[in-house]
Amino acid sequence: MRKLGILLLINLLIPIVVSSQTISKNTYPKILGDSIVLITPEQLKETNLIFNEHNLFKAKVPLLERKIQVLTEINDNHSKIDSLRVQEINQYKANVDKLKKSIKTKNTLITGISSGFVVSLLLLLFK
Image (cartoon, rainbow, N blue to C red; front, side):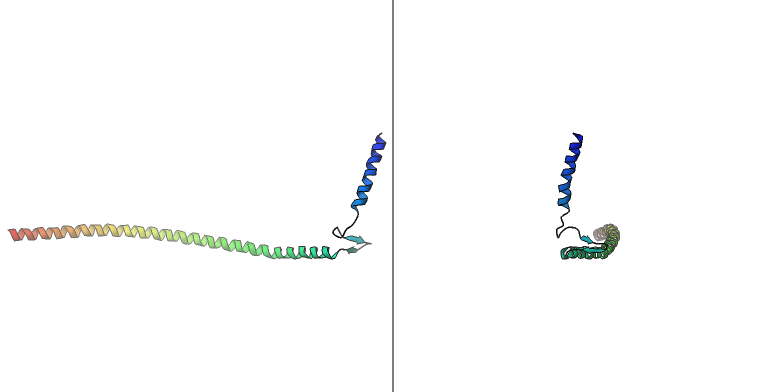
């Protein structure tokens, strides 16, 4: 029984191997003799496209990496400029606050002096 099962499995393998060795024009190239490889024109076009695409990506990747580096540097510069502008705005706000305070003190001083002058004039007139 065991021999019969092995013989049956071997008989099943023969049609599979024979059918998988048929070569159509879209399969791997034929090797004739020792060093001649035959490929179809479609296979040659596809191989050339693959090599051209590989060369394109070999040139494109360093350019993209350089672009990323430049954009990162630009972003860093923008963040530095932004932080400097924030500092300038804070200085302007501090200066505006100081000016408002000095204007307020000057206004109170002027009001005090003018009211004192008016009171002294009134005292001189009615005395």
